[in-house]
Image (cartoon, rainbow, N blue to C red; front, side, top):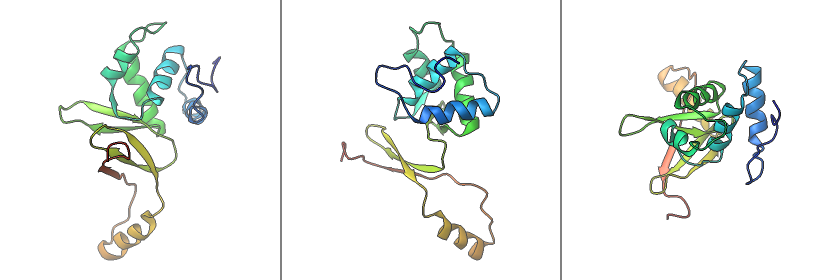
Length: 152
């Protein structure tokens, strides 16, 4: 695990990768050179991306990376909470790199840019669900759709 705690990209290290690599290791996943390359390329995207699109971006990698490796890396990231999935109109699943902490997403409907939104206001809503509907919330997912600052 030669570069376990730093990203090798010329754009500089991504601090959130330390937590991702640690969570992968804790969950029993090995950090191979191919998996690390997939994670680093994926983490730099701030938009949903399909496995096929990510694979195309990694086409000239050394060592070569197969599409199955990309899918397995995305599955591992999903397992530890570092990738969010979204069904696309054409039926393919798209993935978004996420911080492992709980948060929501603000998705630009024009350019596709995604920002993380902290989860601070769910407690009152959770109490309302319990009180008014006798519903005990196990987990939730919330995405906001609109225009980002650059597109509005």
